[in-house]
Length: 194
Ligand SMILES: [Zn+2]
Image (cartoon, rainbow, N blue to C red; front, side, top):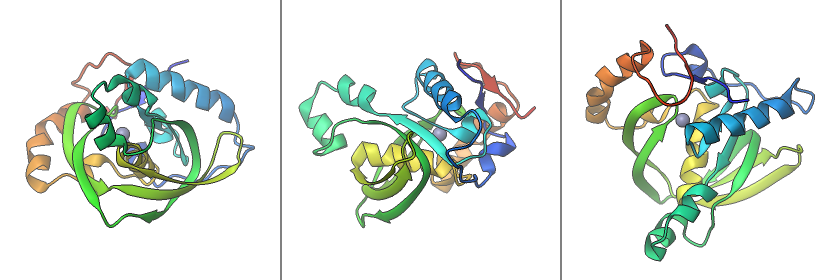
């Protein structure tokens, strides 16, 4: 079942989320519903606060993007030697990041009709539990690492707009107010603050 996506202005998006245990009630259904919500809304990632749960859980599928790029050079630029991946991240912690940073456009299902340039580390090392609560430690780079950092930020109460430059943020202000007031109509269901 696709869930409503919480909009900018909703308090849950600003919470530092709690870790969960395998006993978290309804976890499997929640993960299934998050996948469905993400695909229906056309996203590549979705974090639990975006479905109104302040827990350290996010899902990502970058295979859609990887498969959609025909130009080999563009693909290599975004993915380096990696491919796309599909994964559930529980209680994730970014434990290392590269000195090299890069800038690219980001958007967010909680902030419809908006994009912004965000600078982030090129690669990261992350520890997390997968859907079966097996501990994983992996390194990701490029586009994959960017999406992970975006979703990880959600579990810290951080939005990508917190990383954009002051001028860009000022240009976004009217649109942000409109979103907070529910004056947007994306193709997917949203839960607004007002
Ligand atoms: Zn987001």
